[in-house]
Image (cartoon, rainbow, N blue to C red):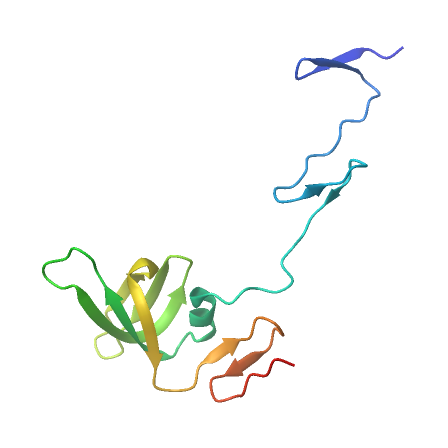
Length: 134
């Protein structure tokens, strides 16, 4: 004899199957199954491009709104790390390290070819390598 098991206000026999949790972003099919969709390739974001170019010297052009002392500032340094909201660079002349916020980043320049992962093929190319759509 199966005993009822209380679950969230409803009573189910202890032999009843409780459906597994559905992952965030998944679709539930009419039959009760779930389909989880994953991105086919990593998308091309500034943080990923900067990570591909760790160790390279770059110039970072930043702006700071509502700052009376300096509205725009230029940082030059070696890329050490990059995250979703920040960049860590070091000045090779002084050894000073800077934590820059992506929020203030306008653009970045390099004096040498950069590595770039083209999002549709997953290949790493340099700026001097032609990128084709085929």
